[in-house]
Image (cartoon, rainbow, N blue to C red; front, top):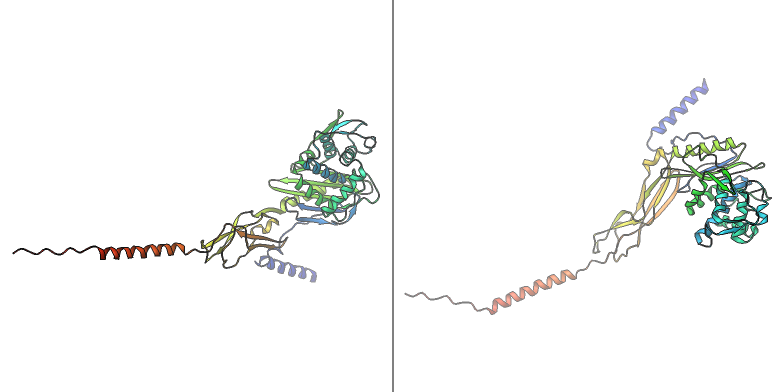
Length: 403
Protein backbone atom coordinates (compact mmCIF):
# COMPACT_ATOMS: atom_id res chain seq x y z
CA UNK A 1 0.00 0.00 0.00
CA UNK A 2 2.78 2.34 0.95
CA UNK A 3 4.55 1.64 -2.38
CA UNK A 4 1.44 2.46 -4.36
CA UNK A 5 1.10 5.79 -2.54
CA UNK A 6 4.71 6.68 -3.41
CA UNK A 7 4.18 5.76 -7.07
CA UNK A 8 0.98 7.80 -7.32
CA UNK A 9 2.65 10.76 -5.59
CA UNK A 10 5.62 10.63 -7.95
CA UNK A 11 3.36 10.40 -10.99
CA UNK A 12 1.39 13.41 -9.75
CA UNK A 13 4.49 15.58 -9.40
CA UNK A 14 5.87 14.50 -12.79
CA UNK A 15 2.55 15.42 -14.39
CA UNK A 16 2.59 18.83 -12.72
CA UNK A 17 6.15 19.43 -13.97
CA UNK A 18 5.19 18.44 -17.52
CA UNK A 19 2.28 20.85 -17.51
CA UNK A 20 4.49 23.71 -16.38
CA UNK A 21 5.76 25.77 -19.31
CA UNK A 22 9.34 25.91 -18.02
CA UNK A 23 9.87 22.16 -18.40
CA UNK A 24 9.13 21.43 -22.08
CA UNK A 25 12.40 19.67 -22.89
CA UNK A 26 12.64 17.62 -19.72
CA UNK A 27 9.21 16.16 -20.42
CA UNK A 28 9.78 15.18 -24.03
CA UNK A 29 8.28 11.74 -24.56
CA UNK A 30 10.82 9.44 -26.15
CA UNK A 31 9.62 5.87 -26.56
CA UNK A 32 11.80 3.08 -25.29
CA UNK A 33 13.94 1.49 -27.98
CA UNK A 34 15.26 -2.00 -27.38
CA UNK A 35 18.13 -3.09 -29.62
CA UNK A 36 19.30 -6.70 -29.46
CA UNK A 37 22.61 -6.09 -31.25
CA UNK A 38 25.62 -5.50 -29.03
CA UNK A 39 26.26 -2.03 -30.43
CA UNK A 40 24.27 0.51 -32.41
CA UNK A 41 24.31 4.15 -33.54
CA UNK A 42 21.67 6.21 -35.32
CA UNK A 43 22.74 9.50 -36.87
CA UNK A 44 21.03 12.24 -38.82
CA UNK A 45 22.50 12.09 -42.30
CA UNK A 46 22.41 15.85 -42.84
CA UNK A 47 23.65 17.28 -39.53
CA UNK A 48 25.59 14.29 -38.19
CA UNK A 49 23.73 14.55 -34.90
CA UNK A 50 23.54 11.33 -32.87
CA UNK A 51 19.92 10.28 -32.28
CA UNK A 52 20.51 6.95 -30.55
CA UNK A 53 23.51 4.99 -29.33
CA UNK A 54 24.25 1.74 -27.56
CA UNK A 55 27.85 0.84 -26.73
CA UNK A 56 29.00 3.12 -29.58
CA UNK A 57 32.74 2.69 -28.89
CA UNK A 58 32.78 -1.07 -28.42
CA UNK A 59 35.32 -2.56 -30.80
CA UNK A 60 34.59 -5.28 -33.34
CA UNK A 61 36.21 -6.85 -36.32
CA UNK A 62 34.60 -4.84 -39.13
CA UNK A 63 34.17 -7.71 -41.61
CA UNK A 64 32.95 -6.48 -45.00
CA UNK A 65 32.19 -3.01 -43.66
CA UNK A 66 35.85 -2.40 -44.51
CA UNK A 67 34.81 -2.20 -48.14
CA UNK A 68 33.14 1.13 -47.39
CA UNK A 69 36.60 2.65 -47.03
CA UNK A 70 37.79 0.82 -50.16
CA UNK A 71 34.92 2.38 -52.10
CA UNK A 72 35.52 5.76 -50.45
CA UNK A 73 39.08 5.87 -51.82
CA UNK A 74 37.88 4.64 -55.21
CA UNK A 75 35.37 7.49 -55.49
CA UNK A 76 38.00 9.94 -54.22
CA UNK A 77 40.17 8.92 -57.17
CA UNK A 78 37.25 9.37 -59.57
CA UNK A 79 36.54 12.80 -58.10
CA UNK A 80 40.17 13.88 -58.47
CA UNK A 81 40.16 12.74 -62.08
CA UNK A 82 43.06 10.32 -61.66
CA UNK A 83 40.81 7.40 -62.61
CA UNK A 84 37.87 7.06 -64.96
CA UNK A 85 34.91 4.71 -64.69
CA UNK A 86 35.61 3.14 -68.08
CA UNK A 87 39.31 2.44 -67.42
CA UNK A 88 40.22 -1.22 -67.68
CA UNK A 89 41.76 -3.03 -64.72
CA UNK A 90 43.98 -6.09 -65.19
CA UNK A 91 43.02 -8.80 -62.67
CA UNK A 92 45.95 -10.31 -60.77
CA UNK A 93 46.35 -13.89 -59.57
CA UNK A 94 46.11 -12.68 -55.97
CA UNK A 95 42.71 -11.08 -56.64
CA UNK A 96 41.53 -14.21 -58.44
CA UNK A 97 42.44 -16.39 -55.46
CA UNK A 98 40.33 -14.38 -53.01
CA UNK A 99 37.81 -16.47 -51.13
CA UNK A 100 34.42 -15.58 -49.66
CA UNK A 101 31.96 -13.45 -51.57
CA UNK A 102 33.17 -12.66 -55.08
CA UNK A 103 32.19 -11.62 -58.57
CA UNK A 104 34.30 -14.47 -60.01
CA UNK A 105 37.10 -12.54 -61.65
CA UNK A 106 39.63 -14.55 -63.67
CA UNK A 107 43.36 -14.02 -63.91
CA UNK A 108 44.11 -11.72 -66.83
CA UNK A 109 40.58 -10.35 -67.09
CA UNK A 110 40.40 -6.76 -68.21
CA UNK A 111 37.38 -5.39 -66.38
CA UNK A 112 36.16 -1.82 -66.31
CA UNK A 113 36.67 0.06 -63.05
CA UNK A 114 32.94 0.76 -62.79
CA UNK A 115 32.20 -2.97 -62.82
CA UNK A 116 34.49 -3.49 -59.85
CA UNK A 117 32.68 -0.72 -57.98
CA UNK A 118 29.33 -2.32 -58.75
CA UNK A 119 30.57 -5.71 -57.62
CA UNK A 120 31.86 -4.39 -54.29
CA UNK A 121 28.83 -2.17 -53.60
CA UNK A 122 26.15 -4.74 -54.41
CA UNK A 123 27.49 -8.22 -53.70
CA UNK A 124 30.46 -7.36 -51.45
CA UNK A 125 32.98 -8.89 -53.87
CA UNK A 126 36.28 -9.60 -52.13
CA UNK A 127 38.08 -10.13 -55.42
CA UNK A 128 36.73 -6.83 -56.71
CA UNK A 129 37.90 -4.98 -53.58
CA UNK A 130 41.44 -6.32 -53.93
CA UNK A 131 41.48 -5.52 -57.65
CA UNK A 132 40.51 -1.90 -56.84
CA UNK A 133 43.25 -1.64 -54.21
CA UNK A 134 45.96 -3.01 -56.51
CA UNK A 135 44.85 -0.84 -59.42
CA UNK A 136 44.81 2.42 -57.45
CA UNK A 137 48.14 2.07 -55.64
CA UNK A 138 49.99 -0.90 -57.13
CA UNK A 139 49.72 -3.06 -54.02
CA UNK A 140 47.24 -3.77 -51.24
CA UNK A 141 49.79 -2.86 -48.60
CA UNK A 142 50.14 0.70 -49.92
CA UNK A 143 46.37 0.95 -50.31
CA UNK A 144 45.77 -0.13 -46.70
CA UNK A 145 48.20 2.57 -45.56
CA UNK A 146 46.06 5.12 -47.41
CA UNK A 147 42.93 3.63 -45.83
CA UNK A 148 44.34 4.22 -42.35
CA UNK A 149 45.45 7.74 -43.26
CA UNK A 150 41.93 8.50 -44.43
CA UNK A 151 40.52 7.05 -41.22
CA UNK A 152 42.69 9.41 -39.17
CA UNK A 153 41.69 12.36 -41.33
CA UNK A 154 38.02 11.56 -40.71
CA UNK A 155 38.56 11.27 -36.96
CA UNK A 156 37.88 7.53 -36.71
CA UNK A 157 39.51 6.89 -33.32
CA UNK A 158 38.81 3.18 -32.90
CA UNK A 159 39.53 1.98 -36.43
CA UNK A 160 42.52 0.16 -37.85
CA UNK A 161 42.58 -1.51 -41.25
CA UNK A 162 44.80 -4.46 -42.20
CA UNK A 163 43.28 -5.39 -45.57
CA UNK A 164 40.96 -3.98 -48.22
CA UNK A 165 38.21 -6.61 -48.17
CA UNK A 166 37.35 -7.49 -44.58
CA UNK A 167 38.30 -11.14 -44.20
CA UNK A 168 39.65 -11.85 -40.73
CA UNK A 169 43.03 -10.30 -39.94
CA UNK A 170 44.70 -9.85 -36.57
CA UNK A 171 44.50 -6.29 -35.29
CA UNK A 172 41.74 -5.20 -37.67
CA UNK A 173 39.05 -3.36 -35.70
CA UNK A 174 36.46 -0.61 -35.67
CA UNK A 175 33.43 0.63 -33.71
CA UNK A 176 29.83 1.57 -34.44
CA UNK A 177 30.47 5.28 -33.96
CA UNK A 178 33.41 5.14 -36.39
CA UNK A 179 31.47 3.26 -39.06
CA UNK A 180 28.48 5.59 -38.74
CA UNK A 181 30.84 8.56 -39.18
CA UNK A 182 32.44 6.86 -42.18
CA UNK A 183 29.00 6.39 -43.77
CA UNK A 184 28.11 10.02 -43.05
CA UNK A 185 31.25 11.40 -44.73
CA UNK A 186 31.02 8.91 -47.59
CA UNK A 187 27.51 10.05 -48.58
CA UNK A 188 28.35 13.69 -47.95
CA UNK A 189 31.38 13.58 -50.25
CA UNK A 190 30.09 11.07 -52.81
CA UNK A 191 26.27 11.19 -52.89
CA UNK A 192 26.19 9.67 -56.38
CA UNK A 193 27.71 6.49 -54.96
CA UNK A 194 24.32 5.54 -53.54
CA UNK A 195 23.04 4.61 -56.99
CA UNK A 196 25.52 1.73 -57.01
CA UNK A 197 24.53 0.54 -53.53
CA UNK A 198 20.88 0.53 -54.57
CA UNK A 199 21.30 -1.70 -57.63
CA UNK A 200 19.07 -4.77 -57.21
CA UNK A 201 21.61 -7.19 -58.69
CA UNK A 202 25.00 -7.55 -60.35
CA UNK A 203 26.03 -9.74 -63.28
CA UNK A 204 29.55 -10.65 -64.34
CA UNK A 205 30.55 -13.47 -66.71
CA UNK A 206 26.88 -14.32 -66.98
CA UNK A 207 26.63 -14.98 -63.23
CA UNK A 208 23.75 -12.97 -61.75
CA UNK A 209 23.81 -12.23 -58.02
CA UNK A 210 21.27 -10.30 -55.97
CA UNK A 211 22.19 -7.29 -53.86
CA UNK A 212 23.18 -8.42 -50.37
CA UNK A 213 21.28 -5.55 -48.68
CA UNK A 214 18.15 -7.28 -47.31
CA UNK A 215 16.25 -4.07 -46.57
CA UNK A 216 16.14 -2.65 -50.10
CA UNK A 217 12.96 -4.63 -50.71
CA UNK A 218 11.54 -4.39 -47.18
CA UNK A 219 11.69 -0.61 -46.71
CA UNK A 220 11.41 1.86 -49.58
CA UNK A 221 13.35 4.50 -47.66
CA UNK A 222 16.50 2.35 -47.56
CA UNK A 223 19.05 3.14 -50.31
CA UNK A 224 22.29 1.60 -48.96
CA UNK A 225 24.85 0.74 -47.70
CA UNK A 226 26.71 -2.41 -46.53
CA UNK A 227 26.35 -5.63 -44.57
CA UNK A 228 29.12 -7.59 -42.92
CA UNK A 229 29.57 -10.89 -41.11
CA UNK A 230 32.32 -12.83 -39.40
CA UNK A 231 31.64 -15.71 -37.06
CA UNK A 232 33.71 -14.20 -34.26
CA UNK A 233 32.24 -10.70 -34.72
CA UNK A 234 28.59 -11.37 -35.51
CA UNK A 235 26.32 -9.68 -38.01
CA UNK A 236 26.84 -6.00 -38.90
CA UNK A 237 24.78 -3.61 -40.98
CA UNK A 238 25.62 -0.03 -41.99
CA UNK A 239 22.48 1.42 -43.56
CA UNK A 240 21.18 4.63 -45.11
CA UNK A 241 17.53 5.64 -45.43
CA UNK A 242 15.87 8.73 -46.87
CA UNK A 243 12.30 9.99 -46.53
CA UNK A 244 11.40 13.32 -48.13
CA UNK A 245 14.30 15.64 -47.23
CA UNK A 246 15.44 13.74 -44.15
CA UNK A 247 18.23 11.19 -44.25
CA UNK A 248 19.26 8.72 -41.56
CA UNK A 249 22.51 6.80 -41.26
CA UNK A 250 22.71 3.97 -38.78
CA UNK A 251 24.62 0.88 -37.86
CA UNK A 252 24.11 -2.24 -35.80
CA UNK A 253 27.06 -4.45 -34.87
CA UNK A 254 27.44 -7.78 -33.19
CA UNK A 255 23.94 -9.16 -33.83
CA UNK A 256 23.49 -12.87 -33.14
CA UNK A 257 21.53 -13.55 -36.33
CA UNK A 258 20.83 -11.87 -39.65
CA UNK A 259 17.14 -11.65 -38.68
CA UNK A 260 17.82 -9.78 -35.44
CA UNK A 261 20.29 -7.51 -37.26
CA UNK A 262 17.67 -6.57 -39.86
CA UNK A 263 15.01 -6.13 -37.20
CA UNK A 264 17.22 -3.77 -35.20
CA UNK A 265 17.99 -1.74 -38.32
CA UNK A 266 14.28 -1.36 -39.11
CA UNK A 267 13.59 -0.32 -35.51
CA UNK A 268 16.22 2.41 -35.74
CA UNK A 269 14.87 3.68 -39.05
CA UNK A 270 11.31 3.84 -37.74
CA UNK A 271 12.46 5.50 -34.52
CA UNK A 272 14.41 8.16 -36.35
CA UNK A 273 11.73 9.16 -38.85
CA UNK A 274 8.96 9.09 -36.24
CA UNK A 275 10.63 11.13 -33.52
CA UNK A 276 13.00 13.60 -35.19
CA UNK A 277 12.90 16.41 -37.73
CA UNK A 278 15.71 18.02 -39.66
CA UNK A 279 14.99 21.73 -39.99
CA UNK A 280 16.63 24.57 -41.87
CA UNK A 281 16.67 27.36 -39.29
CA UNK A 282 18.37 30.02 -41.40
CA UNK A 283 19.80 30.12 -44.92
CA UNK A 284 23.13 31.56 -46.04
CA UNK A 285 22.69 35.15 -47.16
CA UNK A 286 19.33 35.55 -45.43
CA UNK A 287 18.89 38.95 -43.74
CA UNK A 288 17.99 38.16 -40.13
CA UNK A 289 18.51 41.49 -38.38
CA UNK A 290 19.22 45.20 -38.73
CA UNK A 291 21.55 47.68 -37.08
CA UNK A 292 21.14 51.45 -36.94
CA UNK A 293 23.77 53.62 -38.60
CA UNK A 294 23.05 57.16 -37.33
CA UNK A 295 26.02 58.75 -39.12
CA UNK A 296 25.74 56.77 -42.32
CA UNK A 297 24.30 57.51 -45.71
CA UNK A 298 21.73 54.82 -44.84
CA UNK A 299 19.74 55.05 -41.58
CA UNK A 300 19.99 51.29 -40.96
CA UNK A 301 21.78 48.28 -42.39
CA UNK A 302 20.57 44.70 -42.92
CA UNK A 303 22.70 41.89 -41.47
CA UNK A 304 22.84 38.55 -43.27
CA UNK A 305 23.85 35.06 -42.13
CA UNK A 306 27.20 33.71 -43.31
CA UNK A 307 26.05 30.09 -43.59
CA UNK A 308 23.02 27.86 -43.61
CA UNK A 309 22.09 26.44 -40.22
CA UNK A 310 20.36 23.06 -40.16
CA UNK A 311 19.47 21.28 -36.91
CA UNK A 312 17.89 18.00 -35.93
CA UNK A 313 15.39 18.15 -33.08
CA UNK A 314 12.84 16.00 -31.38
CA UNK A 315 9.47 16.64 -33.03
CA UNK A 316 7.95 17.57 -29.69
CA UNK A 317 10.02 20.76 -29.49
CA UNK A 318 10.51 21.74 -33.14
CA UNK A 319 8.12 24.68 -32.72
CA UNK A 320 10.09 26.08 -29.78
CA UNK A 321 13.47 26.54 -31.48
CA UNK A 322 14.69 30.04 -30.74
CA UNK A 323 17.62 32.07 -32.00
CA UNK A 324 19.33 34.81 -30.02
CA UNK A 325 20.59 37.79 -31.98
CA UNK A 326 23.68 39.52 -30.63
CA UNK A 327 23.55 42.82 -32.52
CA UNK A 328 24.95 46.15 -31.24
CA UNK A 329 22.50 49.07 -30.91
CA UNK A 330 24.35 50.99 -33.62
CA UNK A 331 27.40 50.92 -35.90
CA UNK A 332 29.68 53.63 -37.18
CA UNK A 333 30.53 54.04 -40.87
CA UNK A 334 32.39 53.44 -43.05
CA UNK A 335 31.11 49.84 -43.25
CA UNK A 336 32.06 47.42 -46.02
CA UNK A 337 29.86 44.63 -47.28
CA UNK A 338 30.84 41.46 -45.42
CA UNK A 339 32.05 43.16 -42.22
CA UNK A 340 31.09 41.12 -39.15
CA UNK A 341 28.72 43.16 -37.01
CA UNK A 342 26.89 40.56 -34.93
CA UNK A 343 26.13 36.92 -34.17
CA UNK A 344 23.22 34.56 -34.35
CA UNK A 345 23.28 32.04 -31.50
CA UNK A 346 21.35 28.79 -31.34
CA UNK A 347 21.19 27.02 -28.00
CA UNK A 348 18.88 24.30 -26.82
CA UNK A 349 18.36 20.84 -25.46
CA UNK A 350 19.28 18.07 -27.85
CA UNK A 351 21.75 19.89 -30.07
CA UNK A 352 25.07 21.63 -29.60
CA UNK A 353 25.48 25.38 -29.41
CA UNK A 354 25.85 26.99 -32.83
CA UNK A 355 27.08 30.48 -33.66
CA UNK A 356 26.79 32.19 -37.03
CA UNK A 357 28.40 35.50 -37.91
CA UNK A 358 26.09 38.24 -39.12
CA UNK A 359 27.67 40.50 -41.73
CA UNK A 360 26.84 43.75 -43.46
CA UNK A 361 24.70 43.15 -46.52
CA UNK A 362 26.03 46.27 -48.31
CA UNK A 363 28.48 49.18 -48.06
CA UNK A 364 27.62 52.18 -45.88
CA UNK A 365 29.55 55.45 -46.16
CA UNK A 366 29.64 58.30 -43.65
CA UNK A 367 26.81 60.74 -44.04
CA UNK A 368 27.83 63.46 -46.52
CA UNK A 369 26.92 67.14 -45.93
CA UNK A 370 28.23 68.29 -49.30
CA UNK A 371 24.80 68.39 -50.88
CA UNK A 372 23.58 70.64 -48.08
CA UNK A 373 26.52 72.99 -48.64
CA UNK A 374 25.82 73.02 -52.38
CA UNK A 375 22.13 73.75 -51.86
CA UNK A 376 22.90 76.45 -49.28
CA UNK A 377 25.50 78.07 -51.50
CA UNK A 378 23.14 78.01 -54.46
CA UNK A 379 20.43 79.68 -52.36
CA UNK A 380 22.84 82.39 -51.19
CA UNK A 381 24.02 83.09 -54.72
CA UNK A 382 20.45 83.31 -55.90
CA UNK A 383 19.61 85.83 -53.19
CA UNK A 384 22.68 87.95 -53.97
CA UNK A 385 21.85 87.96 -57.67
CA UNK A 386 18.31 88.95 -56.90
CA UNK A 387 19.30 91.86 -54.66
CA UNK A 388 21.93 93.01 -57.17
CA UNK A 389 19.38 92.95 -59.94
CA UNK A 390 16.93 94.91 -57.85
CA UNK A 391 19.47 97.64 -57.24
CA UNK A 392 20.63 97.89 -60.85
CA UNK A 393 17.25 98.10 -62.49
CA UNK A 394 16.08 101.82 -62.50
CA UNK A 395 12.66 102.56 -61.16
CA UNK A 396 10.23 104.29 -63.48
CA UNK A 397 9.10 107.77 -62.37
CA UNK A 398 5.34 108.26 -62.12
CA UNK A 399 3.82 110.44 -64.89
CA UNK A 400 2.42 113.89 -63.98
CA UNK A 401 -1.23 114.41 -64.51
CA UNK A 402 -2.30 117.12 -66.95
CA UNK A 403 -4.69 119.72 -65.73
